[in-house]
Length: 72
Image 1 (cartoon, rainbow, N blue to C red):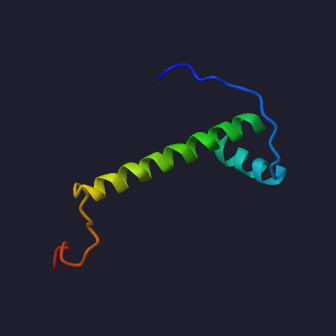
Image 2: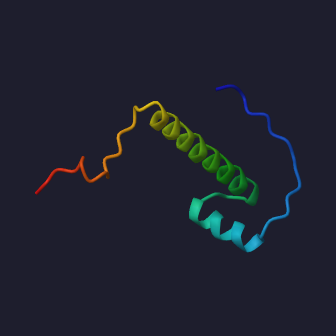
Image 3: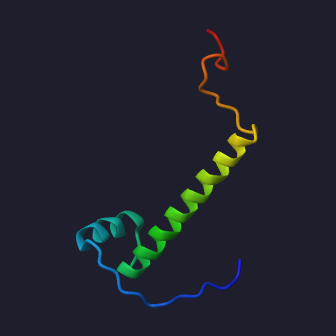
């Protein structure tokens, strides 16, 4: 992974929500909180996309189907 290019942007956000998220994430600033939240969201979307691609090519088994569960 290469160097990350950072740039300053202005965002309009709910300060209280950022504060709550900051406490949950344990970050030290609003900027860090927003950066971490964006990274987390991007990672979750990429993971979901990968799972969907695996499902499309038949490499992901649905273990919650009734016929797959062990009977007992």
